[in-house]
Image (cartoon, rainbow, N blue to C red; front, side):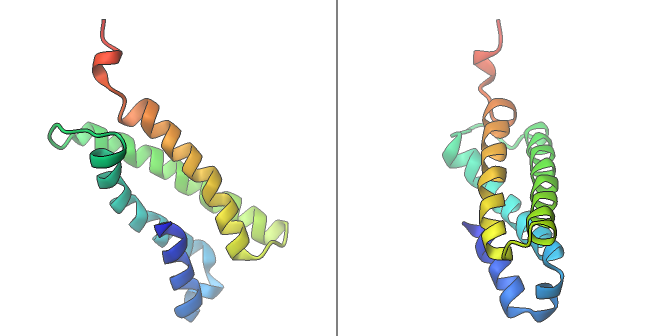
Length: 117
């Protein structure tokens, strides 16, 4: 889990981020998105055609919603429910990964031949 690893690195080894966990969450999430688009295209959804700006735009929309979910849920879990940030980050990651995978599968990377007719 790249997102959680980056988050842990930022909040545990760079002191400033330990006080600003939402910013650390945003940075880790955005770096993970860059990595994730390539892996999803090539491996998960096996898209072999050339780069698609439309597809990348959809991916960024899905990821932006995921970032909003992640930050909002992390804030609620840590500041409102009093959970330890690493536990909260892990729980939130499961929810956001489910959202991202589903939205990307059924919208971003869906096979066009299955929807034409």
